[in-house]
Image (cartoon, rainbow, N blue to C red; front, side, top):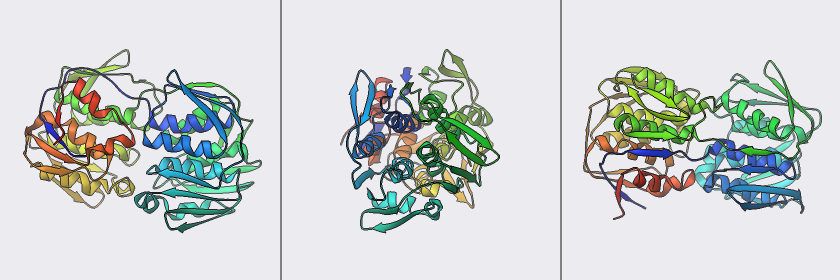
Length: 411
């Protein structure tokens, strides 16, 4: 679906949606607990894919009152699962499924398979993972032993193993290439602890003890999505962003200090953020640990007044699109000045973008949202091709956008 974005001022209060990252983890842990409940989950294409995989494993659940309630596992595990476009689903669920079945198949889109069919899967000792037509065929069984998993490209597989550890007696995880206190790894253990699991972290090693037990988990607001609204609030001082936990473990909470480095500062009022002071100026930003912030920081830089170098962008290549290429092309199409230099995106702010063109969202939800977030600094209406990509993680994005005063037209 293509959308025409009409540049307009935004105001009022936007309540950010629940965290996708926490929702994935909590759904899996609650299911394994045989009676857990996840309150205020995010329902989107990615998290529904995780629910579908859990259903295939035999876990029954009910959805009501803005919660997902699980019961005891009722059926044997199926032999086939669907991850759709969700890399989180595939990497989280693969180790968990392998604790129940010795042979299974996970279907996924061509782009997803391109992203996840990487050497780190070889670290799942005891499994043989091969590409077959439209998915991955898995044979073997995860048991005890040491699993050495790299977090260099993504921490998702390491998080999947952390979720599976309580199901694998005498198993130990060694995380290499990153610190064990990585925000996403910490989030996974936080969820596990809520459902009864104890972890021992020694150096790069993680072991788990205890069994999953029923508990309630309430999902907090999503800082990854909030980043787009915070960017919009930089350009629209009348906009307030609510529903966030200032003490969150989410890695993308880094959006606030990164914006501070750009010269923009917010005031917090009970979890609601409003622009305090500042304009977008020159900076050097490192997103090595926060690649999902690359598109929105680049878009912000395009409508600033200085030169911003965003470094640590290598992981952007392995997302729903090659995000470095996608956001640079979109910025330049709108009349901005952006380029890729080695491991960086360098953007020279021009204040306002001419617009009046068609730009592609590259089939990537974060590219689409980033472009819409800066529309108030675009002179003429522009078209985002494939704007429906937002359904992957934030189905109500354009509904919230219109409530805040954003204007769109479906051609």
